Amino acid sequence: MTSLHKKAIVQHLELIATYLEIKGENSFKIAAYRKAAQALENDDRSMALIDDVTKIAGIGKGTAQVILELQKTGESSLLRELQSSIPASLLQLLKLPGVGGKKIAKLYQELHVVDLESLYEACQSEQVQKLPGFGKKTEEKLMKVIEEHRVKPDRLPLAYMLSLSESIERILTTIPSILRVATAGSLRRCEEMVKDLDFVIATLDPKAVSQEILEKVAVHEVIGQGETKMTVLLTDDDHVSVDFRFVKPESFITTLHHFTGSKEHNVRMRQLAKQRNEKISEYHVEQEETGEQLTFDTEEAFFKHFNLPYIPPAMRLGNREFDLSQAFNPLQIKDVRSDLHMHTTYSDGAFTIEEMAIAAQKKGYEYICITDHSKSLRVANGLSSERLKKQRQEIDRLNEQFIPQGFKIFAGVEMDILPDGSLDYDDETLSSLDFVIAAIHSSFNQSEEQIMHRLKQAAMNPFVRLIAHPTGRIIGRRAGYPVNMEELMRLAKRTGTTLELNSNPNRLDLSSTWIRKAEEMGIKIAINTDAHSIKMLDDMSIGVATANKGFIKSSSILNTMTRAEFENFIKQGTNTIEVE
DNA sequence: GCCGTTTTCGGCCCGACTGTTTTCAGTCG
Image (cartoon, rainbow, N blue to C red; front, side):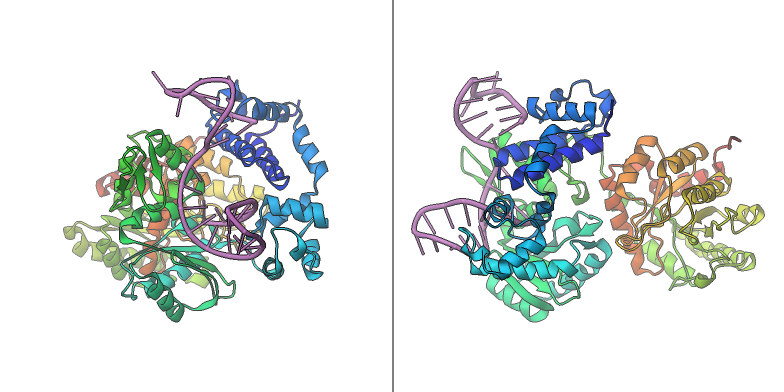
């Protein structure tokens, strides 16, 4: 008996839905397969623990049959049938804007188009414009999009999109006819990879706003323009697409919620409204009996209307956020009392200890940890034991001025775990510090076994309290070193070592998926910025969003501790380590 | 395909835009 992982079963159901879409099946049938996939994914149990899948809402006789067959044989005869009836390469056409299942079906049946290249050829020979529902304009657009598709990536890393978004938002705030503006979409939900930018703009004069945007923002091309929206491509290398949504001030919040998504979240919200005889649109909430239209001043008020706690954008996934008990409080930035990982001019940071401390104090933190690089990281001006001592003395001196103000600087270090698994300082040096972070910065191409040996040496050391950016990935650029995360988590649990959620938008390491796992396993997480400048301390909000996406409780976060609790935590040391 | 204090049929989330039509289907978010 071949048993398939739940995830694999979910993927099969989704693939079936995609095939049905291309076959031009009834859209509700397609939705039913997608719904069944999501329902299965959202169920907390593993396949072994689910005795009867039809008991799960959204899974009925038909989809249960498919699931059962997948469990039994590892294959689905329905999927096999679909795969033999249409070429798999047609799936890539779904990525094209303006192209959906119905159009693909026509292209395939009438013109024998099977992939992007054959579609391009069909356009070139002007066959496509002859099809009903297509025209000359569509044909030209398709060719252009396919040409672009050959070079342009589908989605771009959050960090890059954030910087683009910030520069546009700065411009928008200078336009007088804009009354309110906010970013929406997957960027606001803090997804790791983002497709396009969305801005919701409250204004009474959309035309004037459009005009000013076109004057002030570096626009490469206008894709669409109307009373309620404008879509443009930017002049940056990737020609990132930006949607501007214009809305009357009273509808700002409902529109912001609508375009923040996710799509799945919105569907659930509307179903919920429907049960109450209400209708959510992007403009208002309408009470069906009276016709009364409600609008809101804040998203908090919007959720409250539906008896829901405020759901932060990062949590709007269309599943677990609706199952939260009233007792679950999503983490808020104000719950964070400290940042435990940052750099100063002692190594490769841009500001002095004092400047970083003052900036952190202004953020409302009660304490911070200064954690510069250790001696082996020469490119980052890593600290020798002597310079580390000198830094500690400076921190002690600064604390004489900070502690009376209710703020404390702890002396730490971000110590390298060397390629052979040895640590960059001896235990005597480490024992002189308040908080030791260990991290891998070299030899990323080692085997999983070697990497795990290194991480293990660090986790077992009694002075190491935290492992920073545990996978070493850079989103969209570097996969990181090969780490067996489940093993590292078991190790962290046993030794009482904290793992980091590095808030740098280039890293988000651990990712929200691993944060969820960490929470299940009862591991402590520290949300840190790893700031190398004052500005980078702001990344904490991205870390908090990622933590929320992982549905972790505030009590599982190390740096929500009060200073007294943290001092106690330091004193306690790590768990006694069993010898294997 | 799923579901049911409007239960075994007839709904299923909502509205705008585009390109194609001449009143609308398909796609998108």
